[in-house]
Image (cartoon, rainbow, N blue to C red; front, side):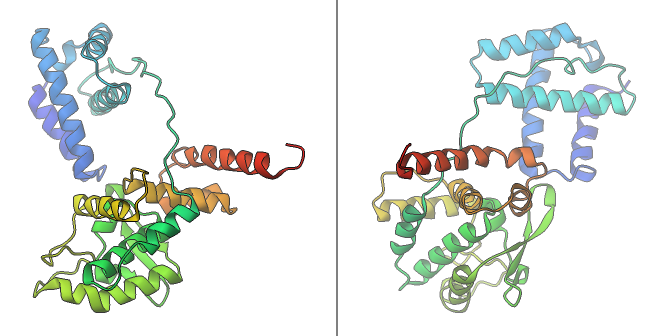
Length: 298
């Protein structure tokens, strides 16, 4: 049997070439598996085939003792389960010691979102008299109009936007592409920014990315988060913001206004509807609160 470093390298190559996993996902697998290799060394486990179900249970106990969050433990166990599943599939091993290890139950946390009036206040607070203001308005409009992830927004190129059909080609997780529509307000803000603010911000730079920073270079996901934090401070709201809240708001507002779950799933780029169902809890609360506030016999 090949040594563990060779098998580890083959697994990473499998994630890159066959699974088409994102670099963020691959980095997560690397860290989780290398952490387990340290545990193997401590336990004097000479090879991957020497690891038993009992060893997997001991590792799980150690993670709890080191006070890892339940979410982190679940991710680590899932990573190792996938690694061993690959080894079994490739006939390097007969059994997967992590197959029967139960994952800790995670608390279901409802997504934060903006109410429509809060979002309107945020839009109104943007000063569009400057190039960066035009960019910020376009950034907020397009993220709310499409529900795309921050990383997806940072990756938008000029050639990805079809103004005639009002759709954007978005490259999502695992490099999966999807077309996402956008409405009138986003179209106007994006058109103004590209033809005015972006040209002034570019400062001689030449690249295809839509959203740029003050130096004219492509805006990163971290840069977008910084901009959103500034917008919230300027709007004077006490609510803490993270860019993913705009994605949550997009989904929640669509469902509140009658959109079906499957359509929202497709727009968000979720691989399964279960990832989208969390938003139904939010909309149910909204319906209940509206009912209690307005029904004569509530």
